[in-house]
Length: 180
Image (cartoon, rainbow, N blue to C red; front, side):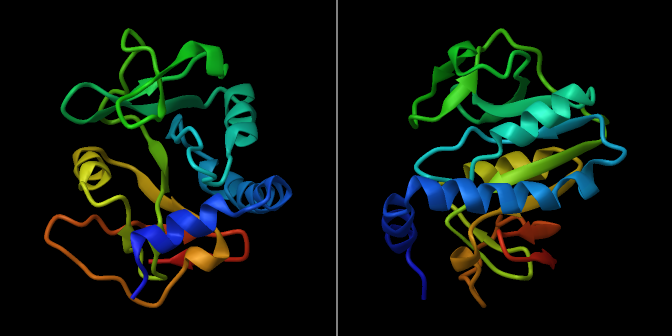
C-alpha cells in the first residue's frame, strides 16, 4: 500500500529537469479538455508537484480565466489569479501560494476544468492527498471536469477509500490519460 511519506520523499528527490520534462508532457495533453471552457482552477506547484504555470499563461492568452484554490480560514475557495505573477500571491497556512484574499471568487455555473494535484492516483479517479480532506470538500462544492495531475509513478492500482473521498473524472500523468 502506498504511503503519503513515500510519495513526498520521491517527489523531493526529483531533478528539476525531470519535473520540467514531465510537466511539459502533462501540459501537452490538457488543451483537449479546454476547448469550450471559460475558466480553469489550477494549483500553484508545491513540493515538486507537476508545474503547469506555462499552461496557465496559454489559457490566459485564450481568455480562459485562471483560478487557484485560496485558503479562507476554514476551507479553500477558487479565486482569480489575474496577473499570473508569483509576486501577486501570498503564502497560505500550509505553505502554498494563493491569490490575494481580495481577488474575485469563481462563480457557480461557470464551465470549469479543474487540475487537481495529489500524492497517489488510481486509474479509476481515486486520489490520495495529504489526509485532511480539504480538496475533497472543495471538489464536491463546485461543478466541472476534475482532472488529477501527477507523475507516471504516482499511478497505482488501488488506494484505500474513505467516506467523503471525491472521485476524479480523469487522471493525467506524463505518460497517459486515464478515464475514471
